[in-house]
Length: 231
Image (cartoon, rainbow, N blue to C red; front, side, top):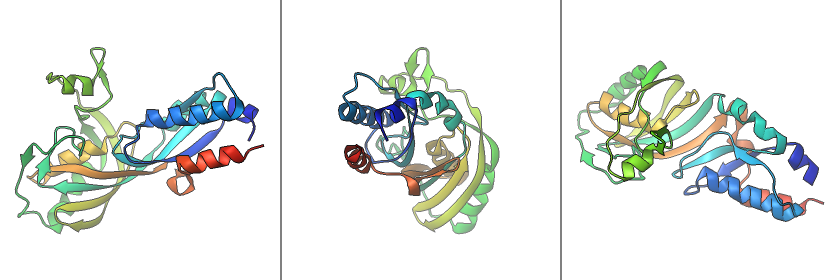
């Protein structure tokens, strides 16, 4: 790939590491391309945010291909993750501490499989208060961190498939295929309610976006090494 290739447009599949924000990945990729080709600027963007505590497939678009970002964002997503039963957190994941605990003694494999049926097809979902959605000019997480109470409207999302990969209490390993805008954190939280208990998301990895698979993605370090080998 040349400088012109990046300007004309490239689709980069990056395996986002834990604790990096999607924005940090974009900044790093942009900086490396600028350094490699001595550029003052280059357009770089991502097609769908992954939370810092999630890993997996991040589609990065450069140059003219940044116009394709909305097209990629609209595609079906697939995730694997772990729901941990018995406790809820304000963020619905491990970004915040457990604030309520619940009994899990009554939960068995049959109940877990029955609960799945409530989350197939088109469902109403409330995004987490700790999310980047804007309300009144501020991100929801900014309201949350300021201790402000805001009303969040539910919205329709589609769950195409929901598989239980393994259940060893208190953890449920899942694979979910869903539409744009679906929060797996919210599914974890609502799944706990469906089981008359509580739950939070303790692990998440995005494995697919449309036809793109994380198996074909490279780490940030691998991308930098490949970039530095370009003539």
